Length: 483
Image (cartoon, rainbow, N blue to C red; front, side):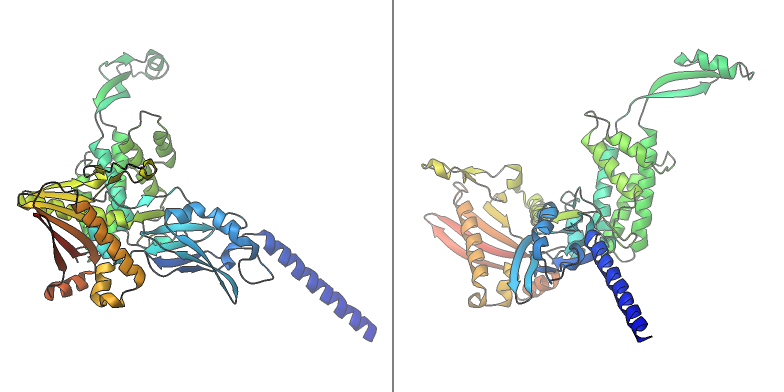
């Protein structure tokens, strides 16, 4: 009896061990099931990426041999979001950190083993979504999110306001309608009076046998806009109206976009709304070289709505992969402020992004040709002088207000000195004007700006005399957004 009991125990142990071995083998070959969404902030603390969701089961903790594979599979996505990988060694082995840069957005992360999406990252803007929304509205959504040709980001659809992606979709639809020119459209209709070409074969096989002798099937061309496309635009606009209305409430950005939607709906009020089919959108997007960019972008935007591809605000779980270059957004916002001020004072704004402020540098050493020109962000010509403006998406002004110069980190001090030297170099190229202003503009939060204004410290100046010319060096704080 004892022998039989021992044999049964050994057999049971063997079966359990074999089952565990099979389970381990299966786990080694299958994709991780968890889909973790990591969070960060632009220029904020490093994001620690735990290996578990992205590697197969391993006897030893940490990334082991899978780290290179993970970085290789996600290189494109990490680069798109300006996430810099850092490998840190510690007592628990190798730790992977991703340092956020000057972009907000969302990207998927692929498994190092299978290449399938096993998680994602959302990087939020340090000045908050309300400020970003106000800046995007002020710049006409022209510097809004760039959509990436990457898979959906798991869980990201509930992480951002609905208007973050709805705004660019609306801008594309607006451009589509503006570029929808009338053209010749071929129609097939059964008419009581002939028009164009009568389809005799159809008439003989359908109309004549049924006794409808006076019904003539005709084919003809007439000038019209594409009513099918306008029906799809109306459906998309109404869907955007519904989605934004669901989260509107006190959200001023959503309410502003709803107002724009109502105006656009007036342009398609004469056609019924019709949900477009995915197949027709794909067919129209593949229309060849004759398809205009406005049409192509508009069709692509409609496909996102048709596919329920995560406009944010909680309607869907997964969302589109996208990136928002905050440095460019800040530059465009400063441009909008300068143009508004120049319009009131009779000034003229030249923009470096458009190639209007380029100053060539004639080096005598050919090896220095890589630095062949200076390009200030903005040059503002006014009746009383010239102002050189550089927009810096950095926290330096807030850092300087919170700390004395001696208390700032050495890296911050060096960066501020570089900014000052740069704008002064630009000022040296300003021409023959006797009155020159060189201004650095930094973003701050609204509450800090109001506090600075109350203490008369929102702008600090220094005067520099160079011969007969006087340069006013200025560092200025501007709130990121209006509220």
